[in-house]
Image (tube, rainbow, N blue to C red):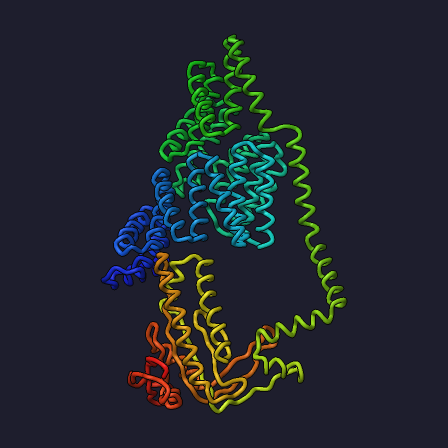
Length: 633
């Protein structure tokens, strides 16, 4: 990664003028820096934003703001992150960029989650899920379901949380995505833990831990060690719990994560409290409280209020206990963390009863029972158990279901043989030239064929690598598909055969499989029509603030050989020096220009206006003339 960062810095320094390409490179640099130092990412993304605003490059400005928001969120500057993400959303809506809108809704949801605003986080996740499902992005939607499940769990909606996590887990298992399987297993384990189903919780945590260790994911390993410690703690296996908490704490010290380190100190404090070593416990709680405050971890601060209130209650220091428990109730009410609210109300009830203030004890106890009933009841536990059984059954039956599906399809194939034959023929005609497909149907194979004279064209997207780093994956595929689908229609109109797409390069040929004398002019006419389309498409991209698409065209004419290659996923292809020279014509062309070789020029010179460009050297061919075609007469 450091090598790529250095190369990017050199490329950026070499570009003197402000341009979308330079903005895109700076944004790429900001992204790479994020894993190393989020603070550096913020500084770099600010450069991208300023440059994009200078040239009115909206897409680049939004991407820079997105990375700046990620950096601010990583530093727990949540208000700044939210401000930046809202600006990103505004631009993405203006650009009608569905992928970008889904991304920023997810980022807003994450930041609302981190800052304790769970209701608004859920709203953003739901908005992103709608878009992802409309885009058929199943994996993206699954991630959002998993995040929503975390919030439902924090809010005490355990049944809804488990439903959501199991829905995500099914998708991850089908995709064999180990990392996300581990994440979902951990989240489900947390729900079981809260429901005191310790055996299931431990099973889920251990499944996740095995995956995370294989991936050498230290941060996640520390979290899972902590969670396993929590299971043993809940089972009153205090020394086992302390051992796992200490393992997690040592890893977190190395990672320098103050919020997670605060959690470790808090948990170890609880163990020492249960061992009756109150002075040590208070020391750990106070350390945890300071770490949570420094890292702006609201849930941790709330946890610390409760822990300190509990231990001072045990020590019969009622004044301090009430102070911390009142803080806990206030904070839990504001954040909607019902588990903490329930526990704090129960402790306050105990405190007042101990002081013989039975009226206040009763009032707090009534509130406690209402919250407790809302969080967990017998029906919820029963339904969760049933859901777990159903999930395990579905896992075991998946292979049997696949076999059943195969058998059904086999029966359908026999019952509908004629229909299948037609479908096969249609597919054959779709991937092969009609004459070649008919030859295969007649003879079961197609012979290689020599053509004395045909024309070949290559065209590719200028600066494709930079464009691919700027656009999201779905945006990029949609744009390329729009261009090359139009090219397919154009070549069919002019009687030209599409051969294949190689990366971002489109290849087609005229004068085959049925020979004709107009192939060179046909392919030039097609090139002009393609260029007209790409200029319109590029202008539309520019209006949206998205990268422009410019194409280079290269054409050559001469002898070549055609044939079918491969036994599986076979393809119709062409070979020979003619093809190689056509590729050289494209490589030596310029954006929005049609570059032809001397051999093509000799065929069409009386039918075109052209400009001689000079010669290039070609392997085994000597020097070859090149011409830009200006127009067709």
